[in-house]
Image (cartoon, rainbow, N blue to C red; front, side, top):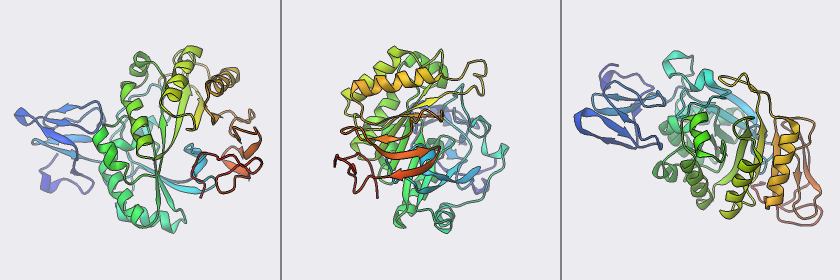
Length: 345
């Protein structure tokens, strides 16, 4: 890497860092708290120590841009039916064995093609595409924190909603700052077993639970995804523990999405999650008291429809990512008037 004055335009001084002896730097963005020596990167591969200063190499260089239905995130109780401008850069602070986007998450910005898009231009692109919301998604948005934060600040000034789809592995201080500018989040709660969390991701469980609580306290609309992986996270006991924790911590109205696993990346020898496992997980969650439980990645089970928790009638019918009908009015069930948790307009 060249001197700071010659660093390319996609590099910025990183936030949340602490200088150590010998020109080492500790990155304090996520719970890895990487101690990074000169000309080395942290686990995410995109934050580098150059001459005792910490830089991010993911600023204005997204590798993926797309317009998606909000349901794809998945977010089912946040402005259903809208399109959202989705973006990501290279890099991730997890090493998930089952990563679907490993070609962009397990690499660095200089190794893949990317767009030249400043925060101002990203917001402008969202407006030009008639999308009044932006999602930071596909890879882990924590690792392009500075780019995300600046884009979110500008977007909010323009009345654009901000969504993050995240593994939740972020320290509290940067999360508190970010939460001022985000409107909704879907957090991947990989499983409810710390040992398996470390095996699957290289991270740990408790920081993710802390993130869920912080987002709830900050009143960011929250939905949770739990991918059920055979041999890892699909056991009845793990699902019961997960649901028990959610109930005990006030998440009974937070939508929970059980998602079907498909063989990918380093877990190609494991079979897809069975329909019976997903159905059983939904029953466990509902019996525990969770009000809004969904099944994803398995068409035909009708597990993506929103049901009123009081009268049990269908309020939103979904086919894949398409809304077929929606009879929620002003946040109320169109049949019995029950208040349905969510952001509806």
